[in-house]
Image (cartoon, rainbow, N blue to C red; front, side, top):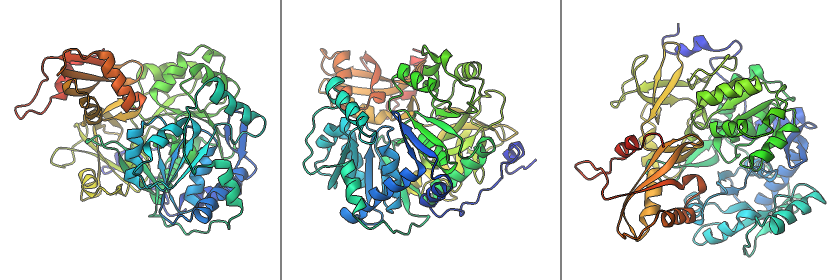
Amino acid sequence: MSSERPWLDQYPAGVPAEIDVDEYPSIVSVLDSAITRFRERPAFANLGKVLSYGDVDRLSAQFAAYLLGELQLKKGDRVAIMMPNCLQYPISTFGILRAGLTVVNVNPMYTPRELRHQLEDSGASVIVVLDNFGHTVQEALAGTQVRQVVTTGLGDMLGFPKGAIVNFVLRHVKKMVPDYDLPGAIRFRDALVLGQLQKPAQVSIDPGDIAFLQYTGGTTGVAKGAMLTHRNLVANMQQAAAWVGVAVRPGEEIIVTALPLYHIFSLTANGLVFTKFGGLNYLITNPRDMPGFVKELSKLPFTAITGVNTLFNGLLHTPGIEKVDFSHLHLTLGGGMAVQRAVAERWKQVTGCTLVEAYGLTETSPAACINPMDIAEYNGSIGLPVPSTDACVKDEEGRQLAVGEIGELCIKGPQVMKGYWNRPDETANVIDAEGWLHTGDMARMDENGFFYIVDRKKDMILVSGFNVYPNEIEDVIALMPGVLEVAAVGVPDDKSGEAVKVVIVKKDPALTVEQVKAHARENLTGYKHPKYVEFRSELPKTNVGKILRRELREEAGPQ
């Protein structure tokens, strides 16, 4: 047994202990090699339109040329993308990377307050936004460094007449595009045309260049940009590809991409790893419309799907799922939040495919541990550290603990971020002197090297795979004049794993639950909204006056 890395003895046949991090100098070179091999193959599909690898090559090159030639951006400048899964997303992302620029992924559901923070913090000079969220950008722009807004409609890449119909229906029938006014904005398609008039982008990209500023909350609740370099993401692509490669047929896979590509799990696992394999990413724009999602699945001979527990659970409870043909499905990967045993077992029963659980963080690009692809059934573990990755469990003093002991899970490997953007102190808090990333998750390792998450060290709340930080919720609720004190905690929830609960001491006796929820809706993205609001005369505190969230959580128990 490898005492240092006991997990290596459990690796499936064909999975190497180490990967070659230097095989590709950048994400762009991985993309170029996929384009050369699979030029005629379908790469991305959405709303009935398919782009081949050749199309992605041509269109992303046009966008890169627009950014460098027309806008005169310089290597390392930041470009924000605020879109759900649609064809413009891969074109923009690969275009930005080809231009030697940095992608800043923005959750389209952000409120103006959240968006403004991210734009100011990243110093983004351009934002590409779907029309549906143009009004948010309009409210958030003041005081930021954004000098060009690029707008696009969901139908813009679908061709005529379908694209025009989709845009008309969204705007005038479904009323999903609130009016906005962004003087000087340019349409995405016009930007591509301008790009054709420019010289093709010729930029040298170094492995250490920042590819993505991927924002994640912190214990402080302020979103911080994890600096993910080309090397970090190439390493994680190589690691994940080595792991799932034993089960993947290059050029033949169809992966259902329902998790948003702005989320690190979907970005790397679907958008990058399956592109390397010449797969077709079938983009689901609105997976919350479960009946519509199931209808899409029933038309498709898909071979792979990634998701979070709530997504799989939602699908299993949607009428019509029994008519979906799962006979081609051979890879189901769950991550982003804990997969529940009941969901994993039901998924296996309905689809015949094991739901394999993986574990990662924004800060690890994201994959750190994955279960073997050939496990027969759900095992409750987050799996084994992927190739070229070390993992251990440490106590409060930083000492490594023995097998079976519970401590903080720490990760080391080429996929660990460079640090947090402009926040050296925060970086030093999570990456120690020996290069170990402290995850904030409490875990144990068994004698075979499988890791199990036991609890979270932080007070973070995990809603459907999205991190919610109590401080941010509390800061927003505390702005209400009727609130004296507030504490936010996560409570168990059947649907989303956890839900947000706020406990409030009133300043104004007339304050109501509905007023609190309305204020939250105005200032926070949907998944951060408190599902439960409770009023009390006082909050439990330590002797120095720190609110004891843990006590509130324990009292809450299952809702």
